[in-house]
Image (cartoon, protein in one colour):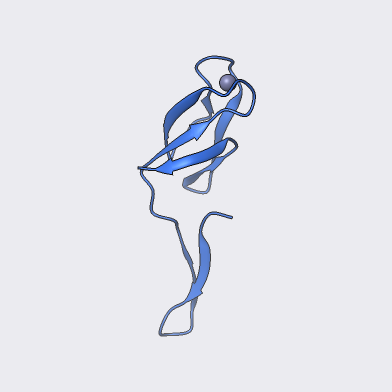
Length: 71
Ligand SMILES: [Zn+2]
């Protein structure tokens, strides 16, 4: 859902990453709000309950929690 495919002027399909550095997320498990790095290269876990909030995927993180805000 994050990121959208667009075609540039050359018609070449390119992936446009949603530009986020830090993302404020809410843990599905315990409701803890936490700011994580959107391009995390390691798994990010909830500080409270240890649920996985984001997993690294192709240079950007796949967010597993509810995104509240892009910072
Ligand atoms: Zn949690």
